[in-house]
Amino acid sequence: MSDNEHEVSVTVSEARISGYGSGGVETVISVEEVVKQVEAIADGPDQARIDALAGPDPYLSIEHLKAGYGKMQILHDFSLKVGKGQSCCLIGPNGAGKSTVLHSIFGFTNIFSGKVDVGGQDVTHYSSNEKLKNAGIAYILQDKSVFGGMTVEENLWMGGYLKETTAEAKEAAEKIFEKYPRLAARRNHQAKVLSGGERRLLEISRALVMEPEVLLVDEPSIGLEPRFIDMVFEILDDLQRVEGKTILMVEQNAKKGLEFADIGYVLVSGQTAMAGTGEELLANPEVGRLFLGG
Image 1: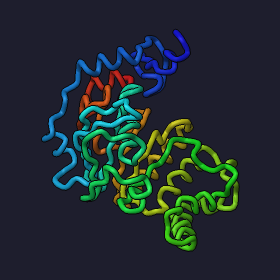
Image 2 (image 1 turned 120 degrees about the vertical axis):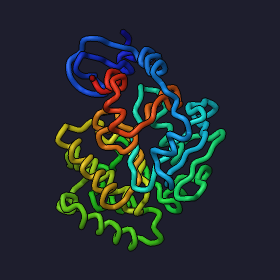
Image 3 (image 1 turned 90 degrees about the vertical axis):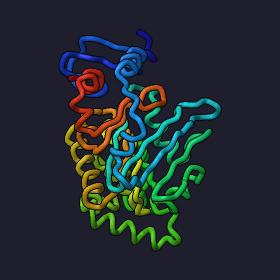
Image 4 (image 1 turned 45 degrees about the horizontal axis):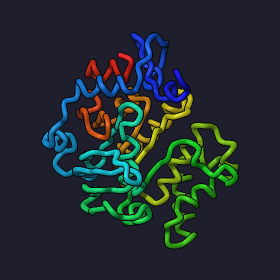
């Protein structure tokens, strides 16, 4: 197997799946084979099912989206709905288009057709700055997005770059320190000395400085030790349940993501293969076999 093939393979054992779960390795299935198997069990949820999962008044809505990079189309007629204060987790094999959904919402892709609506606003063609400032959409990048040579406090100030004044950014940062004493204790430390969990907390907190309503979270558990993964999901749970944030997440640890989320989507080849509550997908034996190690 070549290095590239190894990087995109999904390893399956009777008990667990390496890459999506954890445990021993007995069989290796290529991404191409996973795609075929997901396509075979896909139920192609209809619009009524998508509507029902989000409830009567969806806050984030994607309708028939075709999007990609340059001239390459990755998402094919993709639709999704999430209600106010709900969480949704996207799972699927590598290359399924999961991160492209987040990128398209935040303005990192070319949108060929379709619509993205947040809070009643058509934000499809807003710039990323407009989406953050005017529509309350924040993107929390994968690991290693903190500025290591800056202090924790300076990193938070950077999160407020769209505030009207520096004073407003600093005031918002103080609210973050009040909420997370762990960061406050390290406010004058350079970010590069933080633990992995503290860096992820800083990344999340920096996105909160602009007081967003929608959080796009890309791989929150990637590169973290189990104890820090639990901490990050507790933080996200608080943001959803206590502060009412709407969360759309891509998570390679499918079991953890579906345990957290109200709604789950299984993507394959830029389309929705399955959709259901997190509990429903966790209980689905085929989803378990392919992504959860069941």
